[in-house]
Image 1: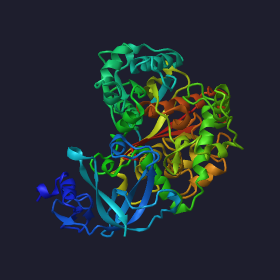
Image 2: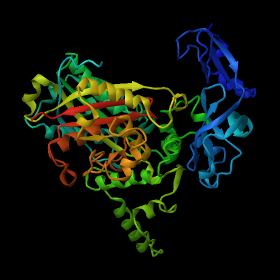
Image 3: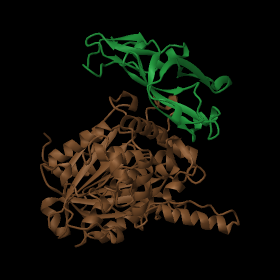
Image 4: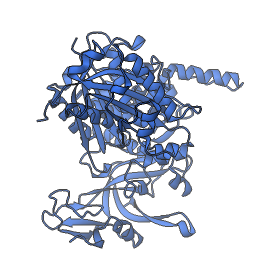
Length: 138
Length: 420
């Protein structure tokens, strides 16, 4: 039952609608984020698209002072760094995302395990504006 | 259980260019340099016409030099056309995977004499474009949009590691100090300087410019000075990162039965393993690299050896935290103990487990496609007593090389044996 809802572009299409999606295997129940067409646990292709509840905890993080071009274009630099992390979602899987709403002046004060909730950020302006998944303190 | 190679494979010669920044050279010049050194290293000489296959590790000459389809070009430039020539791309593990393909070509019986090369010419692009090119090794749909960079990935792994084991972050700096100490004794290294030498040269430069001369109590004070060693991706600073480099390396492999025609002192490839993984976020643990553990387990089983049998190793220290995770993934130290080994000198040249005597990627340089092949050059030099001031003492019988692509999406491990 591979259909468009599980295609790899569907994740970012859902983000445009403020939704974080994944997939659940109808055979073994394994949940994947981003969504998969083949279950990485039991190799079944009986997969359904699900909406994640957007709640999680911080599994790890870094604060980036030397950004790639895309983030530099969004206004980040050594004096205006950003936090990126890996978030453990309540349903189990982990996902990489920007973490916003934190005081970055001393990264040592940011704690692994802190509760987070999903949000969405727009980077770029005008026609190049694009929405991205992010998390913020819950 | 991993099977033994169906036929023995020997290394009979090695060569490398100097690693560094060479605006006057292209990748062709660098590979010719490595190949010429390889020719001189083969004790009884060899005829390039005997080469039957050529595997070339290269990450992205497409981005760095606007040149794809590199293998036949390099074959032509060292005069071995029409030999079958194949470029291998597995990000920063390209060189190690090319080596494995060469080993398998000989073990299979398809070839008796194989040239393995590794190559990257990175410094023609401006820094931001290099960062973008390297980012191609990550998941462009689900990791890069989050804002990750490669220093960022390894920084996140460092954060997870330091938190999990409540480790002292000074251990990261110790890795850098040790590898620069070794690289300072390697004339092929990009940073042929200890951290102390770096401090002195910064003071000299300030004096020449008539600026106030900076003072640091010791190397640790220097490395903790945000002006001297700025934060790149917390908790990793500039000196936690391997540099952007140009360089090439080459290894000549032959079947075991032919080795004596080339040299009386071959070294044998007795173990080879490779494994893959998904994106960093998908892994059960963020403070280790499962594919490295899996690849090394395979290589140890093939060799019939254990981590305790390994006399020294060249590991993929693209960032200082990577070396600490590697020495655990490879079984040299238990989980959570690698940082202590880095702190107490166990990985130094006179320690129980010498790691990266060449200076590692950190100090020797990291021309990505060349790194996995360059590691074999150090194994050869140490095993033949050719490592000069950084030469290890004692009879070196077994060595290991560990080469990682991305954050561990590809890992490849080789074990070498000297028999005489």
